[in-house]
Every structure is written in C-alpha cells, then in structure tokens.
Length: 401
Image (tube, rainbow, N blue to C red):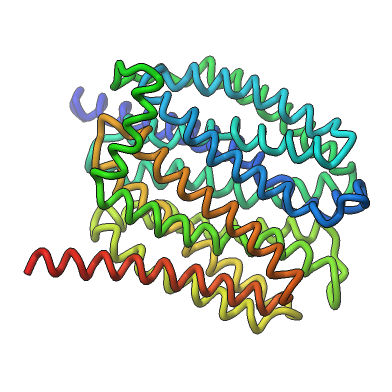
C-alpha cells in the first residue's frame, strides 16, 4: 500500500469518527424535545387542574425549536460551531433542571419552550458534517449524522417511557443533564473547530435568511414539503400515547416509549436515502417518501385496536419521514455552500413550525374526532406535500419546454 493510500485510509477513518461524534451530538441534543411525548399521561396526573393544556408541552418544545433555529442556528456561519455547541449545552442543562423541578404546568411549559430553543445544538452538527465531507460524499455524510439525529428522536421516547415508568417523569430530565455533561467532555477533546464562512453582524446574518428564501426556489419547495411531512409525523406520536392509555390497550408510558425502538428500525433508511440522493437525485426519493407516509396513515386508520398494525405503520412512517428529510437537506446544502447554516435554518424553522402545527392539530383532532380523525389529518398533510412536490415539478417542466 502506498503512502498516499495509507493517508487516504487514515483520512477516511478520521472522517468516519467525526461523523459518528456529530451523529451522537445530534441525537443526544434533539432527544430533549421528544422526552415529553410518552409522559403526557404522567403530566396529566401531576397537574390535574391543567389537564386540558397538557398538549401545550410538546407543542411549546417544537415551537421553541423553530425559534432556536431562527435565532441561534445561523450563528454557525459566523462563529466556531464547537464553541456554539458547548455554550448551548450548558444553557440546555439549566433549562432541563427547570423542567425537572417545575412546580406547576405553566412553569413546565415555559421550561419546555427553553429546552426547544437550546436543543438546536443538533442543527450545528448537520451542516458541520456537510462542511467536513467531500462533495461526492455529502449526501452520505449528512445521512450518517441524520441517522444519529433520527435515532435520538425515536429512542428518546423509549428512554423517557422506561425512566418515567419506574423512576418518575422528573428523573427523565435529570438523566438528560448527566448525558449532556458527559458528551460535552468528549466534544472538548475530540471535535475540531469549524471554519466560519461569513463576517456579517448578527442582524445582517438574520436578514440574509429572508433574501435566501426569496432567491432560492428549491429551498422554498423543500421547506414547504418538509413542514407538511413533519406535521404528519408530529401529530401521530403524542396521540399514540393517549391511544395506548385508553381502550382496549390500557398501556403506560413504557410501552408507548417502546414504539420508539420499532421506529428506530426506520433510521436504517437514513444512509440509504443519502446515497440514493447522491446517485439518483433527491426528487425520486422524496416522491417515494410521500407515498410511504400516506400508506402509513392508511394502515393506522385500520389499526386503532391492533398493536401489530400500529407497529407496521410506525416503521413505514419513520422510513418515509427520514428519507424525505435527508433528501431535502442534501438538496438544499448544494444550493449555497457558503451559507449552509442559514439555508438549513430556513428549512428547519419551517420544518418545526410544521411539527408544532402537527402536534396541536393532533391533540385537537383526537379530542374532537378520535383516532379516525387523526389518521385523516395525517393523510391531509401528506396530500398537501404531494401537491407542492408535483406542482413544482410541473413548473420546472414547463420552463424547460
């Protein structure tokens, strides 16, 4: 083996290790906005006077995430991402401490909003992976880090359900503080500094978000589709906890959290989606993703009393959502390499506004129309994503003609 081959192999190994670290950062950080979902029934018992407002907890967390994306994520183009990750980790630990000791539901909702804002650490990790990887492997690199992020989303429910069942819901937030502090030690030792790509002041940096949105048609399309699909995803998971707590299941938060392990099987689709986007282009993968999400809600509609049906639907739903997100992000990162954090900010703000909308719609639809209404709402979001996707394609074909 030549010296250049040895160096190349060493570089690939180093890159693989950094991508795994970034995947862990993304997963551990983003998990914080999903810990509360299998605990909704516990919150209802802890704060019975505010039972009607329990759905505001996950909605506030996702709305906070969108707000954090808008205000904090663009800083990755201006400052060293490693420093941003460490500062946000310290502040996130304080917000988690407030949630763990919350004496009332309004305090818990406020702490949940802060947790959402600060958990955007994950959105420093994803564009960092695109910076580290060569262009021909960018989709695969993003897919690797997104696998960690998506596993964090899904396994958060499992961990929270287990800890909440045996140690109480307050311990869930305390355990997250311990995990974050341990990860911060590894970040200090292993993660390199990033190279800022902008010298703009904070105000001008935020102003460019609007200019990028207006200028980049592909960014607008990806953001709208992502928002619709994540709305469908987000309306399902909190309602699943309420479904399993009632007739005919009578199952607690631990079992609701175990569905996260089922959905984690779908995270295996993340690297595949990244490679497919590299080879075939992202549009084909997005088309397949929309179809899978629609099929998942058809399965759910016939599975209101069937655990097996719910398991199958969860796998199909998670594969579809994950493949769509990775394909969309692979696409937008190629639009403006020097503004990846800001491009990612526009996409993810829309994405989590969609998620907060889905959580609110899911809770309202559940109380008004039951499980069937929730499934119809999920299909409606999928149909809207399909319309945006194909309307854009039709415009592109017309311009080409």
